[in-house]
Structures are given as C-alpha cells and as structure tokens.
Image 1 (cartoon, rainbow, N blue to C red):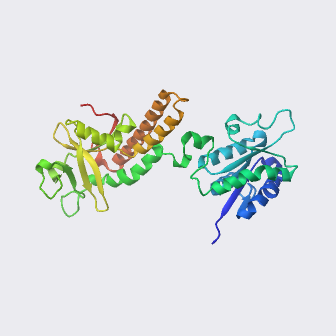
Image 2: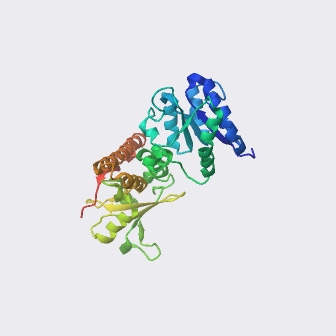
Image 3: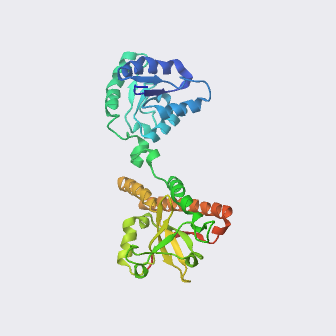
Length: 353
C-alpha cells in the first residue's frame, strides 16, 4: 500500500478479444510499465455483470486508451462516460482495409480531437505512434485539474464538477432546509418557549449590546411564516446584488434575521407582512454558483449559441430548483402538519420598488 496505485484501462471492440489484448499487453503495457502502471482490459478481474466492471474500471482509471476502430457503439458509450470525468485519455484507430481512412470514418465530435493511427500487425510501429503522446500525457497528469475532450471543452469543467439545480438543491436541502424546518416551529417540552430563538435586525428597538438585533416574542412568533425566494434571474440571489438593493432602495422590504440553533446560527432575511406578522425569507445564494457556471460557458460560446438558448437554460434550471423546493414543502407538510400555511415557495421573485 506504500506504492501509488496507477491504472490504465484499455477498451476496444470485445468481439475480437485477442486483438484488444494485443493492444493492451504488447503495445501499451511495455510503454507504461516503467511508470508503474497496471494495464487492464474489460475482461480483467472478477466475473459478473460486465457493465458494472467496466464502469468501475472507468472510474478507477488514471488514463484510458480507447480503440475506436470501426466506431463500436459500446466503445463510444464508454468513452463518452469517461469524457465526463475529464481524465486523460488517448484514442487510437487502426487503418481499415478500405479506400477511406479511419479519420474519415470517425464521428465528427471525436475526430475534432487528436487520435492516433495504429497498425496492430506491426507492434513496433504502433508503440512508436503512441509513445510520444502517452509520455506527454503522463507528465501532465499531476499538473492539470482536468483534460480537454468534447464534453469538458463545452462545460469548461468535468461534468462531476458542474453545478446543476438538482445537485445544488440536494446540498441546500440537507444543510439548510432540513436543519431549519420544522424546528423553527417546535417548542421546548418544559416551557412554552420556542426551541430556537429568532432575532430580527431592528436597531431602533434594540439595546447597545445586541448589535441591532431584537428577539421575537412568543406572541410575535405565533404567525411567523417562512418564504423561499426563487429569483426571476440567477444574479438576483448574489450577495452583491442583494446588498445593492438594500443600499440603493429605502423601500426594500427585507432586513437581516437570525435563527439561533445550538449547532449553528442560520442567517436569513425578514420582512413584515401587511398584517404586521413577521415573514422570514431566504434568497438561495447557492444558485450564484450555477449562475457563474452558465455565465462562463456563455462567454465561451456566445458566438455559436444564441442568447435565447442561454436564457432558456437559466429559466429551466431555476424551475427545476423551484420544483424541488415545492416537493420538499409537500413532504414537510405531510410529515409535520403544523408547518402547513407557514412555508411558501415564491417563484420568479423580483424586487420592484
């Protein structure tokens, strides 16, 4: 276990396993052994579901060698999965016995990236063709966070690192919503006090030692509600945008609030409803990460993809996030009926003075 485990996974058409083993054992293995790599193929390892084994090998591989000769669907599928990881790979293709070259028969999205022509009937030729790029790739493995392929170039990141509305909601739900609700409305067993105190920023009513915050009384908590503000545009949940609204608009209705839970404080906002009741609110600033990701891709492809397409993508992601919030609300109400009518999801929120 003191040695660094390094794996090279070699994939290719399985209908000719001898040919694949020639590529793996006679061409690739001699080139990688000096670097301490173990070279494996889909038929290496335990028996069982072959796709499970392939997926595990794709995940564990430090580098992939993909024989795309003949455009085998399984190989292309596996290569596409590996592309999503952003890990280094080398694609090779054998010159076919036709008037067309392998490049002309290779799908355009693969052909746009460099691949090497080999001849497995000439092992030494194939080794010489692969060695320079293989050596260069190994030298860069510890220097780069990810490698380019059709997927990572578009997203400017491995897929696993791309924020999505669904992925962001899972963390938002686990770390915020589930921690805050329904405890916000729970009371202590030994008294009528609420389990966790709520403080609102009201410097005109506070003392000098409370930093401008005032604790809500039990009476003020009776009709307290909570609203989750899903913005019309993602930039509207960024801290800088919210701060600018507070600084530039005296009529902006939201001020700072805190819910003090023993394990951690929750920082929110609040406003007063027309009835005079307090309404806690949260701008899901986690969406700002998604906004940055989409904005970065938009800058890269603004000349190739119409602005309307980016607006549709932004709208879809916000709607996906909102729908997940609605599902959470439904589950929360079914499990904790006392939360009913106290938790609202506001779609397309936008401040209008």
